[in-house]
Structure formats: C-alpha cells, structure tokens
Image (cartoon, rainbow, N blue to C red; front, side, top):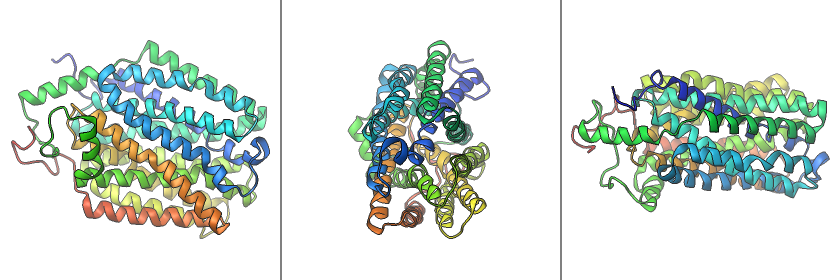
Length: 432
C-alpha cells in the first residue's frame, strides 16, 4: 500500500479537517454579506443611492482575492498547502477589529481587502488539498462537498450575524463572531491540518509508471513543469476548453456580487426587516450549498458539461425572476432557483479544470481559474454598480447579471467539452 493513498475514505480524517476549514472560511466571508450592506447608510455613513461607493468594497474584495488565488496556487507548489492556509488565517485577524472600530466606509473597504487575501489563500488551499488526496472519479463529489461546506457556512453566518447584530449591535456582534471564527480556524490549522503536497507529487510519479485506465484530455504541447506565464496563457486563451471554463467562472461571480451588495439594498427598499432579509438572502446560500451535496456527485456519473451549461442558464433565470414578482416568498423562491443553478455549475467548473490539468501543475491551474473566477466579483460589482447608478434603479442590476449569465452559458456551450476522463477519455498514449 502506498504511503500516500488516494480516496475520501482512505483520507477521511484530513478530508474532514479540510471540510471544517472551508466551513470556517465561509463563516468569515458570510459575516460581511448581510449586515454590512444593509447598514451601510446608518452605521458607516454611505449616502442613500451611492451605488458605486457601496460596491467599492466588493470590487476591492474581488480584485484582491483573484490575485491571491493566483499567488496561492503557485506558492503552494513551492512551500506546501498547510503553510499557505495558515498565513491566510493570520492575515484575517485584524478584520473584525477594523469593522468594530470603523469611523467610515473606507475602513470597511480596507477590511474587505484583508478578507480578499484571507479568502484567496484559505479557500484555494481547502479546495486544492482535497483534490490532492482524492481519486479522479471522486472529483465531482469532492468539489461538491467542499463548496457545500463553504457556502452553507456563508449562509449560516449571514443569518447568525443578523440576529447577533440585533442583540449586541452591528459592530460588537461582528467583532465577537469574527474573532471566534478566526481563532478556532488558527488552532485547527496548526494542530490538525496536514500538508497534502506529498500526495500530489506521489500521483505525478505514479502516472509516469502506469498510465491511468481512462486517460485525461490534458492540453497538448505543454512541458511537465510549465512556467507561471505558460499556465496563465493556457488557462486564459490558448486552450479553448480551459478559457471557456475561466470566462464562465468569471461571469457566474456576477450573481454572487449581486446577492452580496445589491440584493440586501433591494430588500431594504422593499421594507424587509434585517432578520427577514437574512433568511431571504440565506435561501440562495442554503440551496446553493445544500444542493452541491448531490450536484457534484451527479457530475461524476453524467459528466460535467451539461451541469455547467444548464447551471449558468438556470441561475440567470433565478436572478431575473427576483424583479418579476413581489413578496418575501417570491424573492426567497427566486433566490433559491439562482442558488440551484449555482450548485449545478460551481463545483463542476472547478472539477472540469482538475480533470484536464496534470497533478504536477494542477494547483497553479486551479489558482489561475480561481483568479479569473473571483475577478468576476470586481468586474461584476463595478458593472452592476454602474448600471444601477446610470439608470437610478437597482432592478437594472438584476437584468444586467441575468443577461450576462445567459451569454456566458452560450460561450461555454460553444467552446467547452466533456472533461470527465471516463466519459471522454483521451486516446491511449496521448497524455504522457
């Protein structure tokens, strides 16, 4: 038996620790998603209707997180996954204190920059580490469990912080919640999390000795250890499949940016209370997170292509439905539809990237995919902020995001392909 066996069951202890880590990562971002946008005017001095100023913190978050995803992937192949994870949590320590002490919105933007660093380092590592220790036929399930844990954490934190803010006040409530989450995460990282880079190296060595039963469709003409620039070019435009996945990842973040910054403002404008808003927005996160328990596994059986394409279109439809009806039940249902579409595409876009990139540089490939994906926070937030500002109506932002999702899904349909090695293997000898 190899010293570095692959499989969820074979590595259940570390797999569980990584799931706990991504749950805590979800808590960290979730504490920023409901209370802060809703109270931007009363607590932090953002003037009513200042859509561009309101979206500034999400733009900052998206750009910083995108860059850190890029850095994290490459860095983890040099110093290991566990060290990158640890640094991500250390950098998060000042965030709750900055929110508690914030005299103006600029401090919130600065805290969100640190949150972007934390999320880029920590969420990237939880994802990469689980892919390191699981088999190719478990990637959909692995990604589904990873994103289920993370986004249930996001949704739970949004609801919990709404209640805590009403009980203790927004600032003190977020301080207590945030310091607790980060403190627990640091202890768990130091005491129990192992570095999984040795598993990736062992898998690379095993592939040299014996080709897998179902050879993956790796890109042609790529050296065994490509440079950062070579991987970036490959992911961004040279390989049309990887480029199609990257652009889909970028655009789907428009939905998350909308739910983060505009949806709470839309609901406040309709008269929803803070806790009612927490549950409506939470419907998106709970359906997104919960559905990934089976949508990731589903793609291990039926493939990645159609879950990805249909997910883009279904999520876009859910966003559009929000502004086509009225009432808390309608908004929660629409948010749930958008969340289900996200559940179809979110784990399976990442699994598709993992399917067709070799283990020697899979961490870099995932980091660059996540760079483009989370840049969508910044581009999407800026776009929907501009649309809302120019039209003077928050509803226009929903139309902008929905149409973007429909168009991006069409690009993925045109240029993507099935990546699951069992369902679409490469010819024998083509993936040396």
